[in-house]
Figure 1 (tube, one colour):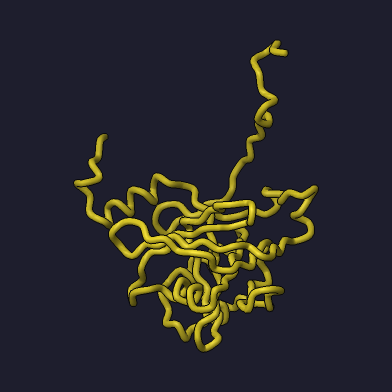
Figure 2 (cartoon, rainbow, N blue to C red):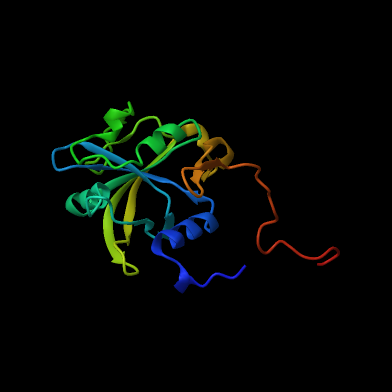
Length: 206
């Protein structure tokens, strides 16, 4: 099947892309509203963009009321926290994806405990395996819609002790979740280990 992008509507394009670009890791972002409420929302167009300094990026589209609470809070406060949920929290992650007014704390509404961050003013989720305190760096607009790519510098990592081994995160024990098309989520599945780059060669190679 061949599909010309020019023949698609915006919703059709979104459905196609979210079905093809899978699986997508989820940044469960906590921010502070002007009234001091902990806003919480998941975003699945999420990646890291630099390791020196550590920087992460997330693509955020427009909301029903214009600019979503999360990017508005990120710009206003200059801070946010990226929380990484495990597979026991799929229902809470999905519940916080719906649009709530700015004065509603999704963390409080869905019984998600928060604790103060060490460096930024925005709280982090207490019961997730990983949280990253971030300072907002920049945002860049792409396309003709309201989508922007937000980048933040990670200033502090919080990782459960048992997950951090020899300088690495034990991914299988992390049990992360990912987003696929529609209101559907997936787990990590089997891990297939291959030879490290630079150590591969055909049989008998020296």
